[in-house]
Length: 145
Image 1 (cartoon, helix red, strand yellow):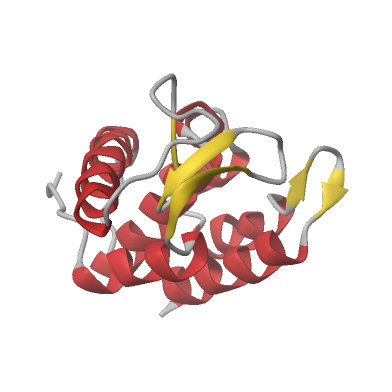
Image 2: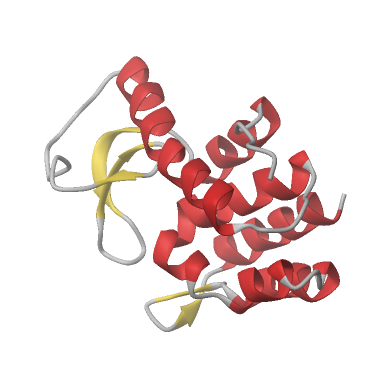
């Protein structure tokens, strides 16, 4: 299998949906978040960072999704498909990707079925979130292009 790197196009997609916040905030799921969607025990109320910190954390955080997608996908894919999957994995989490019907369909070669699965991941806290609807649409479009 080919090993992919996350492209500048993919990184721009992630940045566009995450947005840049230099002060910690609670996301729609109540998780403390900062920078470009960075979460973890190092993020807490009152934390502030620089844009350079945000970029560094994003590259580290995305690298985990890159590794996950490279390991999980066992069929040939394009760079755009890879980038869409990495953004999905970064946003939804590695466990969500690994246990998803999206990945199962992809790995049996059902690319159309896999693309349709993105739209199902638009909920947070039990509610449809319009930002997630838009993000999943963008990922599905990138995946299909």
